[in-house]
Image (cartoon, each protein chain N blue to C red):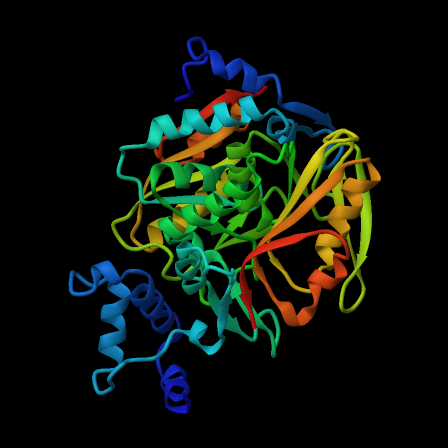
Length: 182
Length: 245
């Protein structure tokens, strides 16, 4: 389910800031670069506001952001809706006790970690990242939260690459995005 | 302290930490239904009276003093920063801000303190250092109407970048910024969670100055004064909320 692209006048201003960089990080990949969005204060604020409007008043107590671009969006949403911000990180970045979730990449595996004790059973959580591609990273994030008994209410991204079918990989969890890129 | 340490060694690690963290951060739920991990702790240690001080009690935090007394918000911010001994390697007392992010009031106050300081200073750029600078920088940028510019490790930013090499304790590292993100003459803030030796902040300042930007100030939540980062910044002002020895 995407934002009402036709109706919300802010979406176009956000969409036009996203820059496509060919052959990054390797040949054949058209990389969706979101950093120019942060250079437009109004468009950046609009993107955060759209998420805040959607999630305030929904009793969400946790916003989990995926390293590193999820850190750019997640905290502002968390602050506005009165939720904790929980960083989900690559291995060995978080100090102290962590739980880990391994996930599959195109070639090989990677791992996402969360602090033990950051989230309590029964909490309602949002997972935030800049983009959903295959959905592997978001799945790992959801698994971490569900393993400690939290309820993942929705995944929120600025960009979706629908051709990579990440939405289907989310096992029925709702996904909310602002922009689809083909 | 020694007795506390022996208790720490006996108790199962994940439940020990989780219980101490929740006791520390959730005073409002004391006496209410206890979270699962606290039950685990009780089951493991029926014969012990568990009153292990949280790890961050090992280090004294000195809040920022001012002539007429510190801002009342500082004390709470300081109290929710957690110290993890021997991370990432033995002998280092790591200042962990992730516990600050779990305290909605303290996190809000942290951002407010920076925003109040910078909102009328005509700052058009907030540069945040990967990755924890990405947590504090954007909320400040959004509140003061500035751009946010991520300063990243090598090969993370797509497209054209400029790079600055800087010294580590052993070896060097590289920081990158997008070409064209900032313009000559802009006024910038550099944000990170913590200043230690100041090497990373210096690299960020150099990147911005190379393209003609005026770095107005560096802003961090925590300073480790013994590592003399402030001195390394030379004439660049540094503003911190908590000074930790």
